[in-house]
Image 1 (cartoon, rainbow, N blue to C red):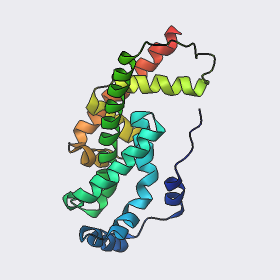
Image 2 (image 1 turned 60 degrees about the vertical axis):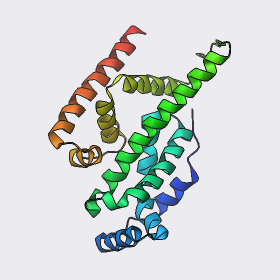
Image 3 (image 1 turned 135 degrees about the vertical axis):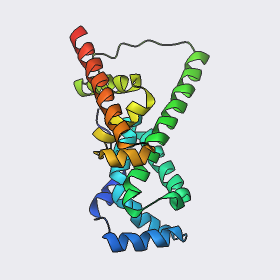
Image 4 (image 1 turned 90 degrees about the horizontal axis):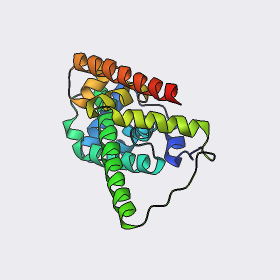
Length: 199
């Protein structure tokens, strides 16, 4: 199943991130309330944020909403940023948490809607592409992971973040990130191999 790329991602891909001195100037201006400076500061990270959010929730619309909420929260909380190099981790951590929160809300709404009407079962197996099936299996396997492990695995695989960046994003130690990543990947692999072997 192909999803249309949000327009803001094509804009983000065209721009290079600012250099260190430019980054510091933009950060200072954004901290002073300059919305344009904040926009320039986060624009290079939009594709990463969307990727993390999409992987965390598995839905393009929820991922876009998560990115929007991430930007609002990041703008309000920018004063909490400890150093300029932590911006990527700061944004990624917010995106991961917002996507999970939105997914939980969507699941609750869907459950309420389903319980309020008679369930209809349709056979869609023939309509689903192999890629969609694999995505669903991965999503399911990710859902089975404990929350902290899930966040670490998503930030590592989708965000391509280092242990240090993940630790900063989640407010934990690098050692804890390594353990969580190892356990999460082991559980994810076992879950996917178990499903593959039973089909």
